[in-house]
Length: 178
Image (cartoon, rainbow, N blue to C red; front, side, top):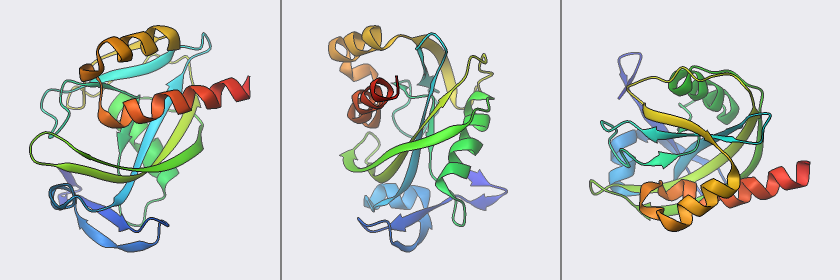
């Protein structure tokens, strides 16, 4: 993947989010080094969550269902700017976003890759219909939380590892806000 014809890099950090340097994205995933990431959740006025199935050409977790969008901030880019950028790039949408929590996780994936991320989680509210990028998204839907929770419980293999780690925490945040 490239960013303006440059190698796409991630921001390496320690557990306290202190920047340690930069590394090419695939190398960081092969070595399992801790780096910054973002996850975005969009909820509509009916309380339904916008989730998507990752494109089948993605370098990991392809074909799995996950939150509205996710990615990594570029060096010198803030996490909220990265979240807004990816929401537009992946889903063709804009929405005001608010960071609701951050967490660290480390999981082995397919293709001998490891996700080791300090993931900042954002939420936004929109009734806009997404216009997804086919290179990123193979399918999408709005779904209510109870249906989603049942499907994740019955079919966990259909969802990304990070989504399964955070979707209930996002729901708890939404309950507090209402």
